[in-house]
Length: 264
Image (cartoon, rainbow, N blue to C red; front, side, top):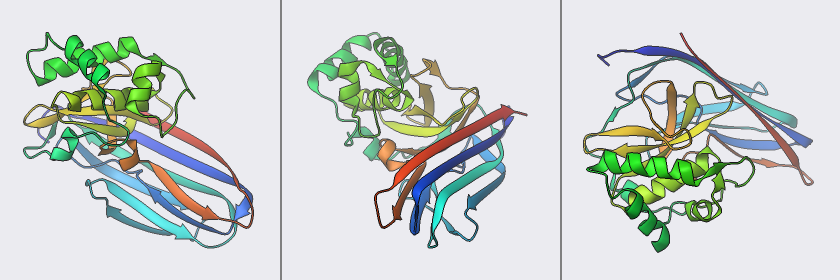
């Protein structure tokens, strides 16, 4: 990192409460910002409650940091808090050999013919990869209406294209699907952004040398104010929190997420 740099402090907390208490709990987290050519983690701390949880760290098959563990005593809540300081340059992730998996559809980013034809039409004035991706981002932002609870984690890009409703995850899935349908490498990204009290999703498009960030929810090419945590073919590759728990009866789970990010 040799160019202009900006530092951000972050805190990301997720808490699940269980009724009744569960007896065993296995969890998998992606809660620590990644390291790349434009992002460096200066300090970080990850805490998990109840105390005594077994906690390990590794990387997944796509290179994302992965925290995982288990707890085997009765408990009615689980809390994870990730916090620290990240130093960023202008968003551009150098990658001379991008994986070809980001050219092909995944379960949630399949693309049918009407959507492909729409994408070709709205990007016909684009001179190159980034020009086409920019036009596509503008068109998606105009086509979709942001609406909470209109979709879920299993909603596909084509369902979003047809309904015209969704949240940041859906905007990112649709842009990813349409880019790939035109032969443009694109991948789904999750992380944190200034001004949001929750996690956010956006898209990275490869320009031949590096991944550039596009945020179709806000219709902007990303420069500053974003902390990347993980990427994948779609959200199923990089969920921030996934768990399995056991009890003697049906369980009600309530999830609370709090995200804080500020520039230093």
